[in-house]
Length: 361
Image (tube, rainbow, N blue to C red; front, side, top):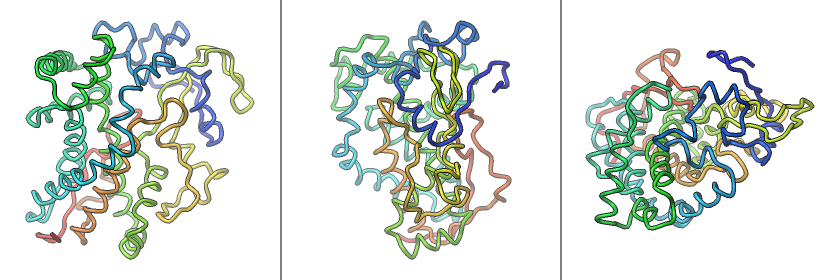
C-alpha cells in the first residue's frame, strides 16, 4: 500500500495474521532494521535524534526493551493499579461536580483529558500546575505537527527530582541505571503519550453508548456488564487505529505473502477487530459480547504496560458519568463529531453533551 507521503508499506488487516504479527520477534519495532529508503525519509523519530526522545519502549527490542521496561513493572502492576481506584474515582467525581450544575459539558476537554492526565502526572510526580502543557505536546506529536518539543521542561523536571526526590515514578527511575538519554526518552513517552489511549477510550466509549441507546439501556439494567462494555469499545472503536511500525529482520511469510527484510509493515487493529472470520457480526456494538479476544493492547513483549490502568480509568470514568448524569445526550449530530487528526490514535476531538443540571450525587 502507498501512503499519502509517497512511502509504501505492507498492510495487515485480517485478525489471525495481525495476532501473529504482533508477537513475532522477527518483526522488529527498531527503525534501524528498516530498508535504507524508509530511514532516509525520516518516518517517525530517528533513534539518533539529538534530543534522544526517539529511543524508548516503542522503538527498541530485547534485550534493551526488557531492561527499560523492568523498572516500570511495579508501577503498573495489578496491585499498584488497584490501589489507585479510589483516587481515580475521586477525580472523576470532582470533575463532574465542576460542570453538573451547568447542564452541559464537553466530555473530552472537561472530563476524559483532565482525568487521564491527572492520574498520569500524579504517578510520575508532575506538579498539578504543569498539567496543561501536555495536551498540546501530545496533540502536536500525534498529528505530526512541527512544533517545539518538551525537552527543556523534561530536563528541568529531572533536575528537580535529583535535588529533591519523592516517592513518584520519575524519582524512582532516576535512582536506576538508565542513561541520561534513556531517562529523558522514557519520561517523555510516559508523560506525553501515556495518557492519550485512556482519553480516547473514555471518549469513544461515551460516544458509542450514546449512539446505541439500546446498549446503554442494557448497561443501565445490568451494571455488571460495565467491564464487558469497555472491552467491546476496545474492539469496536478502540483508541489505537494501528499498531506501531514493524520491520522484518529476515524475509517473513505472512498469510502466504513473503515480505522482504526491512520493508515497513503496518498492522491495522481496527480492521482486524472487524474481521468476520473471527468475530460474529463484527460491525455490531454488543456490550454483552462473550467471545472478544481483541488486540487493542497488543501481544507479546510489547503488550501495553498501561493496559490495567487504562481499563480502570475507562470503567470508572464511563460508569460514573452515566450513573451521575442519567439523561446524558449529544448536542451535535453524530456525523459532526470530529476525530483527532492522527494516523495512529483513534479518538474524539470534542464531545459536547447536555443533561439535567445537578444530576446525581
